[in-house]
Length: 196
Image: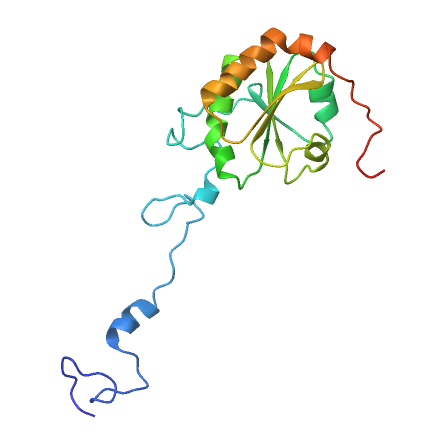
């Protein structure tokens, strides 16, 4: 076997069965992913999927509001009626999906408004991936969808990543005119379904 010279490749003195040395250097290194202890990789970067909603450190909006049980609540198909439709105060609902980038972008604002309007408006969110009945019933086709309820009736709706100022203005309008709109809307028939 010939001595290895610079520029020699397979067929010029190297064993064709053996990969070049530079390929061996990287072939045995395992792919480094998030560690179980910290959830970050070697560089200290946390994967996007591991970042909880609303914990974006101000990169996509205002600084996130700390999680508070009374600021923003999670509703399901089972708790929807008692929380939203039979609620005593106006309710703002964000229909979201955990994989929706625009939902993650809007959530810090929604949380901030939940804190600012605490006591006068109930803020809730509903995961459409685990609760399909309620979004179907209200015609929610994309996320995020913001629906506003007064006296259990939908009175206003916004779809998509809207300007936060528009979202705030709608909340203000619902507080002022929501009950009036709810009185002029049709009551929900709980026996109606889309399946005949």
